[in-house]
Each structure stands twice: as C-alpha cells, then as structure tokens.
Image (cartoon, rainbow, N blue to C red; front, side, top):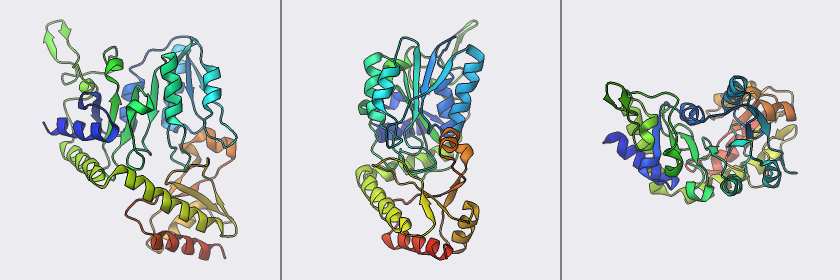
Length: 335
C-alpha cells in the first residue's frame, strides 16, 4: 500500500495514472529499465540531442554496438535548442526511438519536449523523455508532452531523498513491453514453466525496496504539489533570471546557459579561476553551488569547449537577497 500511494503521488505530479508509474532507486535506473526493454536491430536509428546526459548516451552506444543500431543527433536551432523542424526531417521508417533530455544538467536550456512529442505521436515513434531536472521546477503533463516514457529523480527539484526516482510508461505502450530483467514482484511465477507480467508499470520494480526512502519521496512530491508547481516555476524562473542579470554584469564572468526561455539552473565560469576554486570560496561564505563537469554532457561540452562550470540552482525557498549575496560573493572573486 505504501508504494502504491507513492505511485499515486508521482502520477499526480506528472498528470498520469498510478498504474503508469514504477518507483526506482534513482532516475538513471528508471531510465535504463525503460530503455533496455526496447528492441533494436541493424540500421535502426536512435535520435537524441547534443545536451544528452552522458549515462544515457553510453547506453545508446552499448546498444548500438550490440545490435548495429545507429545513434544520431538532432540538429539545434540558432539558439542551440533542439530544432523540431530538423527532427521532423529526420523521421523515416528506421527511427525506432526519440530519446531526449528536457533540461540538461549543465545549464538552463529547456528543450521543446512538447513539440518533440507531437512529432513522435504523428509518426508513431516511441519517445523517452529524461525529465530529471524538470520535475519539481516545471509543470509536467505527460499527455500534453506526448511521451511514451518519462523518468525523474527525487533528489533534485523535488527535494526528496537521494536514492529515489520513478518511471512513467504510457498505458497503451506498456502492454507490449517486457522489462529486460524481472523478478517475482514484477512477474509472479504462476506455474512450473510460466510467469505473468504485472499489468501495470510496476512490472519494472523488484521485490526488495527502500521503503523509508520511498516514503520520503512521496512526502516531497505531495509537499511540492501543496505549494503548486506553477507557483514554483514562476518563482524559480524569476530568481534564476535575476541571478543571471546580476552575474552578467561581473567582469570576466561567462554565463553558459542556452536558449531564450531558460530554467532555474544558472551555469557560469569566472576568468582565471577554476570552477572548483569558485565553489570552494562560495562554500566558505556558506553559499551552496555545485560543479557540472564536461563529462556530464560530453557532446555539448565538446561542441562548446566547456570546462567545468559552476552550477547555481535557485529554488522557490530562496530569496532575492540570497541571489544578490551569491552575485556579490562572485564579484569579490573577480577582482
């Protein structure tokens, strides 16, 4: 009953049914359970983005090596955001999957996930959306997004425990999918030579689970929903945009966020001072930031020659004063 109620909470957070949600130990595992349940053959095409998370791309490469499938990058538009028109031109009968990251880990880019979904549905191509950085800061409606699969974590903008995540899989898509690995929870043994998959998405779960962490995930989701995701989005964007404006006035500072309508991840570097040194100094001022290394988004990093970047992720509980405090601390470092 506990896990079922957590599935219900995750469903409310994504506009899906409880039966379409499977809980996982993290977003990467949720994503892998979905991806490795799909079948590919020689010359099948997997379409993805420049901003794709490294762990996802490694899985693409492994499946390509095993099956002869091809991994191809969807071109960006002039703002270096995924170009839906370019995606449309790439579609043919060999495309077996569109898999993109909605918001990358290394900046405020927001890819047009809903436009991608319209194309995927028009051509009946499976669509896997990594929403790890989006869930908890943006409204998520899987019906409007048009995705067949979506994955998320508890530990980022939902502010839940580390070691939690979930997978959404569309009901009509789910019925034809068998997980790459199953156990007696996802597929009960019903006879000497027969098992039956669960009818819901929890066929992707296993018998053993960290129930305390899952309880924490449910509390975090319900807490965010009680505040209102639309309110959270507005405040996050406001704080992030004000922080970018303050940082952009600092000499020798470069902001690396792409696109025009950017999310609440602010990535920057300071001339002549490595990102880890910036983070160390800010921690001394009791300011929390993190580092995004080039290895987290290798295609984007190689294309733009990105070093390690400082990542600031203002959330709804932060204040304008705190954003200004961060900018002032960075300004002192630039002198």
